[in-house]
Length: 122
Image (tube, rainbow, N blue to C red; front, side, top):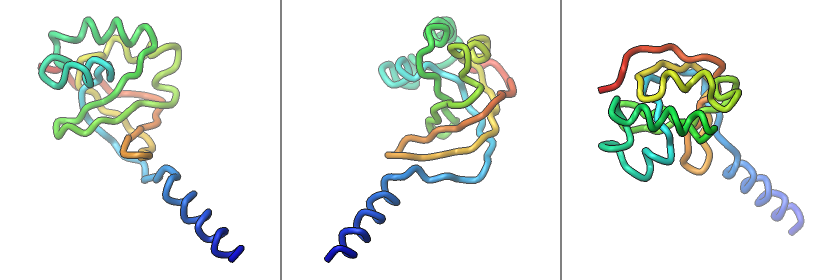
């Protein structure tokens, strides 16, 4: 009976642990996650929303990268240091981020130390 509980505990820990994937490069638009979630893709993205996204990023709010296919990646690591200081000028722009991808409870996170600017989003 004791080994059954131990086995179940190991399985539960494995299921709830984040899944670590190989290093990947992801391309998408940098958005303020709260605005994107609350306003949707129409009003929470693009150059028309870039100024608002920059203001939110300066306040240290959660920044995410949204791919063309609609996948959302939260950002972590050095790239968000100093209350997103390095991200602020790129809010509302299309960027490329290379880093380690993890997924926990359906949320994807990319941990990186740098971004590459691609273009201004439409």
